[in-house]
Amino acid sequence: MTSDSRTPRRRLLAMSAAATLVLGAVATNPALAAARDVDQPGGFYDTRPLPTATAGEVLRAEPAGLPLAVTVPGLPPLASPLPARAQRVIYQTTDVDGRPVATSGAFYDSTAPWNGPGPRPTLILGPGTQGQGDACAPSRTIESGVASNPRSGAPIVSYEEGFALALAAQGFRVMLVDYIGLGTPGVHTYADRVDQAHAMLDGARAAQRLIGHGSPMVLWGHSQGGGASASAAESAPEYAPELDIRAAYASAPPADLLAVLDHIDGSSLTGAIGFAINGMVERYPAIRQVVDRHINDAGRRALDDLSGLCLADTRAAYGGHSTSEWTTSGRRLGDLIRDEPEALRVLDHQRIGRRAPAVPVMLAGGINDDIIPLGQVEQLGRDWCAQGTPVHFRYETTPLVPGITHAVAAATNFAPALQFVNDRLAGIPAPDDCGGF
Image (cartoon, rainbow, N blue to C red; front, side, top):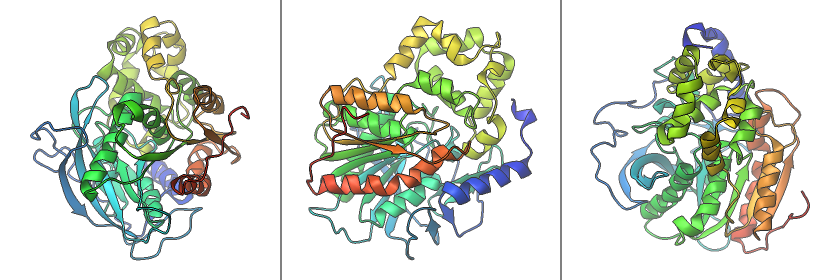
């Protein structure tokens, strides 16, 4: 489906409102202001004039206000005033090829008491799918929790801000990363294992620079964020061995992108395949060659359109469609990639589970998940178990409601995940389900 045949805006708004009430962070401020200084030369997010620095160095920061109130359905309500002071941050990281790149995030310095043992911990939060346009970056919507995408007029709901503030209410400092190219110049390399791991781990380093000292660390994420957390956990011993990471939580991680591609094609989130293709074209010539040989004009228009869309307008425009509509042969992209050895090697390079995290990990997978298949989450757990990592596995059992079930797990897994990381911070031995799933 191309942008000129997009779902009417009234339907898009209704879908977004419904999704917000079920699973998002709902701000009391109803204004849908345009996301902050999108693509403005000289603005906060224009990183082009910034010097290259050490990975994790804070390059730019500014204070930011918070919404009047935030509600996360399924979680206890947050007291007013909200339990954190927030700021936007630009920090240095490196991409999959080792090149320096500046990326952005939001740091929530908790004002709630920390009642656990030891010093106050810092939690690095990898967001779930936001989209690919710069306006989608979570740090751009700190003040209100909502905005509108200048590209489409569609609403943007910063649902991850609700989780960040819920965690701040528990006493955690929270660094919410935007990922490379989401909010800052360049293409957002959606689902790239290495880019996301580096953004998480350098976000942890940046948080330590902001607070002025080391801190116990926790990695946390659902969906795209689950993949980022999982990849960061297994990359940390080599990439950031100095960080005091105590535990990782990865809910519905896309550990095997080819399996996820097959599962998601034709779902409410088919458009996310376009995000991944756009990002991989930027990094890997083999994927660019697949696009050049096999993508038709409608597919090219779709990929260009998706490069500027966020979650709500992506679901509305491309949900329920298949990538077979984008190819010259009418075959789905997953089938085409299987016939392309070089492209298969790229997806194999993206596989999470080939290195062992040095900390206990909680994995969660949904039995009825319509976006992330359970089997590949279980396989990730088995891969880590075989390398000696203690893995605690939670099966999420929300009944299938297409377009909803996957997202609801971020809330239903919250309390068990919070207990898991608090116990690790307290030094309690981790539960180990290896051999049981």
